[in-house]
Image (tube, rainbow, N blue to C red; front, side):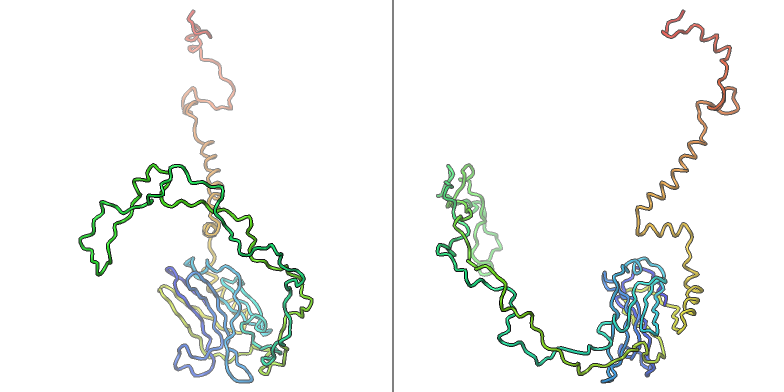
Amino acid sequence: MLCRQGALIAFCFSMTVILSSEEQSQFNDATPYSIMFGPDKCGSIYKIHFIIRHRNPLTGTYEEKHARQSNADLSDYFTDHMTHLYTLNLYPNNTFEILIDQTVINNGSLLKDMDPPVMPPREIEDPDDTKPFNWDDRTHISDPTVMKPDDWDEEAPRLIADPTAQKPTGWIEEEEPFVPDPEAQIPHDWSVEMDGEWEAPLIANPACANAAGCGLWKPPMVPNPAYKGKWKPPMIDNPNYQGKWQPRMIPNPVYFEDTEPFRMSPVSAVGFELWSLTGNVLFDNILLCDDLMIARRWTEDTWGQRQKPGVVERLLFATRKRPWLWGVYIFTVGLPIILAISFMWPDKDYGPPDQDYYYKKCDEPQPDDPQDAENNTGVINDGRNT
């Protein structure tokens, strides 16, 4: 199945429903099916569902069996706005494979990796079995030989007032640290019936501006050296420990064997069960067959023909997960270009090639021009003229 995604995907459910051979005149959420398979995006959760509808041979009822989700990161498939191919392979040995773009992202067994399991357990816990009243399943117990010391005071507080603390000099106990604002006025729309008695907001007491503090002074609290807390006896291994109790196992009365869940109800149609919050999500090219080689050849002839990007496209696609590759690309491509320009650019010190004074750095030394030698005969190293 191909899923071509356009704008930002916000669909929360998308399933390919392989319908059973029962009546299909009314297709709805209650229509019987054999397999459900497809992508599911809800918020930041990305899943690929594979569900089979299994019939209990004892009761004749049907129950959904869900394949366990893999740990693969599927976020890129739902957010890259690209066309993707979702594939489910079922094999006669009751194994399955789930692929996206021909890459296996989940596989397992219909007998071992479905939830709930296809076959119920052979044995179950006896619902009528109860733990004996004298069963001791405590691994550790309090040591009965240790008694609380006589001088252990459980009532001693954790913190006490610091006995060494003294009230700072200049502390004014007669003044409150905050007083009502004398300039505050009752709002004109204040209603005693609706708002209650009006009280002026509190401001810092001006009398305490230069004081060490105001109000009732209390010494700071410090840990109590006599504090011990509630006494508890030490724990020891329980000599009567009998282990964790479990009810006895009995044969499962609803047990059945179905070693071939691969053989499902015959298929008569294929449909879509969609719950989408946005548009621009298209599905096409559904193939259902019993020959793996046909499926692979069809994939190569259809989806595969559109999934052969060039070298540049593959390099750009790789930067989506590895942005640091941009630095490698710039260094790899940019450095040769810079070096080529630096070697090919003409050096203005040597002039254009059509002039007499043009020569290359690698040429042999040239003789001095006679006129230049005559003009420079009066110049010596100390800068004075002779």
